[in-house]
Length: 84
Picture (spheres, helix red, strand yellow):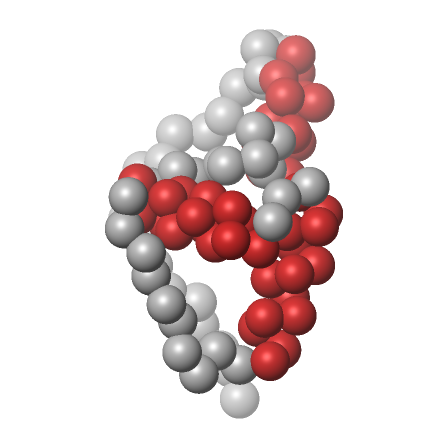
């Protein structure tokens, strides 16, 4: 395993890192490893929790087939017109 030293880290960033590490029950060093791993491997959701949009979708998924008919989209999309 390699060792990495980060110089000139802003005090506020260090304080925020300390808080996040404590929140996750990890050391600051472990927190940095997890943050780097997730950032570089593309882990979208490292905590395992789902986002707000996904929660809203789950909440109303049972309404997806409520027999609603949507009008066909025959027009091309257009930008908004602002009147003065």
